[in-house]
Image (cartoon, rainbow, N blue to C red; front, side, top):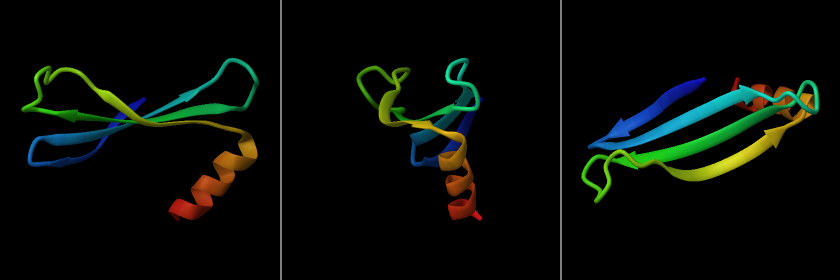
Length: 65
């Protein structure tokens, strides 16, 4: 799933969240950015990636609440 987290003056930040096939119960989290006035405005740059175990996912949910 891709979700736009913010858009400030053409600087977009997106979050991706996907379940992983292996190990079971784990998820992949990725944060990217895209700048409309860049040389290649369609390109996204990865800012952060993380593999979340079920416990780590619960901790993230607690943090966000």
